[in-house]
Image 1: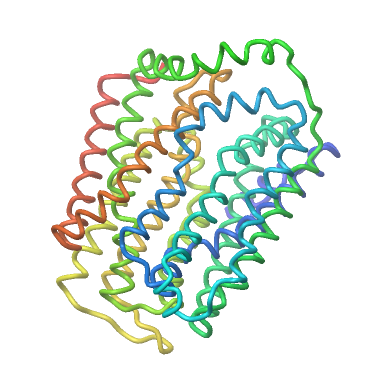
Image 2: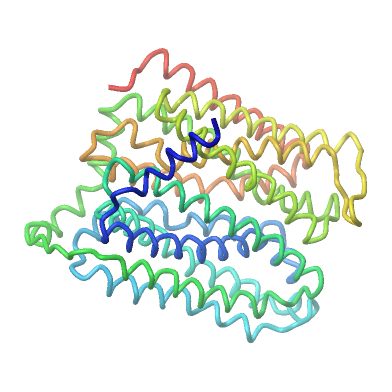
Length: 436
């Protein structure tokens, strides 16, 4: 059975045109470099918390800036259609957003100096604000370039292979970066500038993908009048497509719990359990490993069922994750493995988080497309990204406030209840509004 499945996967590459092969190779190398960057950023908030003695609220701001520009995604999507030379624009944008990481070389190498000069904490946050500004521009262009070159019958599978490669690179880099930080906590001062260089190279490789620029003069003429109507058109999509609107309401409820938990989990693992960087990297890699295994299965399932069913599975897995973290605060139980602590409840939680990561990767990434007519898929996804950004501006700070007022257990209980609410919204939506 495994051999047959492998043979079917190999057939994906049969008959590929030269243009497709070049695109896939460049896309694959980009995915490796992107995975390296994601592996380092997986420990980003812990570096801010421990090495710079940042407050919990400052850590929450770091999470907020990751999605700070997402509400503007609908405008960025339109702006991209007006750019004639997308490759030149992307190279310039890559330099502007990646070069600031070189500033980490000048950061002091001791915690006391950093703690006494808050300017370095704010500079740290500002540098990563610049870094994440690129995402709403880079993601659509990658999809544009690859969609233009891959044949439709293998576009999804080729894209899924690059996602798996990204996950593998992320897994390895998170582990080794965690070990490096345990050996030398100040090593981020040299690793992050290197990630800036790697990030620029990765985006530059994307610009080498064969793509014929097409200038649309009608779009240029309509630019001034169209931009003012973009928001109205986005609202109109939600009003006309009830199933899509329900999907976004459920995602908003889920996202509130997910974002509330982000900063709280960082403080919880760091200050309650006093985990080392290597131990944190171990737990963070569990969902990555499980998602690599589950992506092909969930991807096939996603094509066969209502995406809201996959969302319910994802929300349920997230609820179990937060419940296990909640239980870990009341029930002790751990063992040592090769000098590292394995905490049973945290381990169980991150196993459930693996099912969540695999299913949510698909629900968040392509779920909106199932509700959209083919020619409007990009607009639907832009609406989805913008709503993601709106909740990202609010709920990380709400999570910190909940933790400060009602403690870890109260905050995690709120997250569990929000996931249950999201499940109920999706279930009711399937009963009332079918996908047209």
